[in-house]
Image (cartoon, rainbow, N blue to C red; front, side):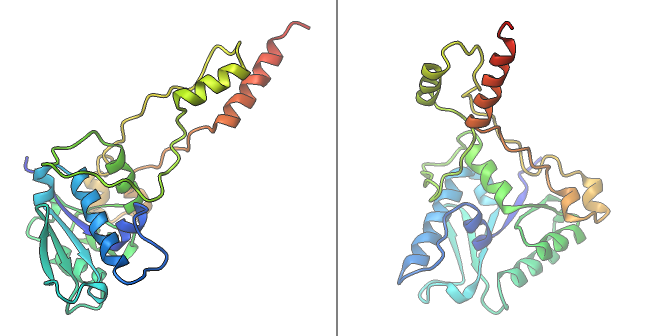
Length: 232
């Protein structure tokens, strides 16, 4: 089966990925936007980039750029002639020739409802950003991934931290694994039935896994266990 088409709410995903700023000086927005596009291209394979469209609001588009351009095989659109990017994305969803193969990336409920109406799949921007960061290296065609501006805490413990804690709790016989856990495809758990029946957004969004136990919580619990095991 051919790769799905991916339609991305550009600034929405840019904020979710930690690549936006609260305020922009002259030229800052364009630099952040290009950095975001580079990060996105580096996380997608060549076939995926060819079927990916990113939509930005036209109000912030560079004056000297066309409203449609290509970036590392991805199509980039600025919502000229529309009220905002959401309006253009809705029109693209409504007019798509293969909606069942369409994947919409946005945290906006309006766009997720528009995707359901066409029986397309939708994914929250934050989940998509986390999946893209955690997935194995793709066939990037030479693109280099830009690091996120604000790396997220993953709950995993580095080798240095493990050594530090072992110095403090030398008799502890268990430590959390430092091995990374592969991220699940953010669209994998969305069933066709859920999309077809028009279920609420929460019912078609992949379940969010509980946050990993913090280091402090783990070692507090471990110390309590060791105390309980001491002979009376």
